[in-house]
Length: 361
Image (cartoon, rainbow, N blue to C red; front, side):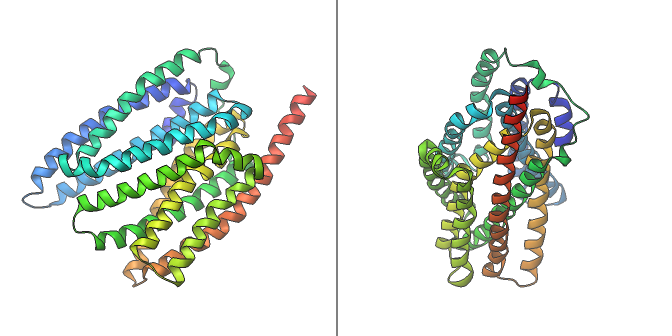
């Protein structure tokens, strides 16, 4: 789906496509809410094959909607900002993202208790519709964007770009760590809580805490770290997660340790890691980035999550325990730190080549 979507979006202005994605996503989620209301009444009696298929359809559509929104949001940034401008605003953009996580984390538990878990889908619909006016404003003030940036280049061979390949490998490893932590956390918390609403509340507070930490970093901490250490600051994410995973693997795999590891993963990924990736993407030529993003930011992410989930499910069936599963993420963190250092070197080389081309011109 995402490569086809990219073919449609590439020759068009990214901000216009983003508005279309927001509106169509809101409509789709509203339809899914109606379907969930029907399923809720149906499952009172029994869970049959039709119900299972419809719930699977809901999961796929929900995941695809959020994926397209996030991917096109990144395409808008790629189209509007230069490398210099991106360094100034990326922290503010990440700050808005983490503040949204705080708001969602604090409200989703109470909302699910008083209006049911299905109400969270309606909350997403409202959020997408509320974002439309700002998208229209950005489209209005950015009409002077260079049209060369929105031309489709079918001959772009993005898979030959070393920065893109490095970003792809970095993304795969981040998702492998994220999926393993989510799986371990969900298994332990689900066994410790008594109802889905209680689990939503606990996880909501976890997201709120991670959002507060990410907001503090995005409000200025990440920018200061970038000025002080450069892109080497990206090593803080895998090293911090690895430290907490070491405690889980060799000391204690409890709700508290897994929640701490998950919270750190979320906070660092929403701030340092995402900022690092955003800055590196700016160094990629715009036509190459537009062609590569659907594969790196969507196909690679979802394929990695699916493969890792299958592996974790198989290992769990074979009798592996949480500390043993967490050791897989520990190995991924070690490789991720090495890939991050290589990616930093390739980014600096790409920026030097860009400066050299401008000097010659």
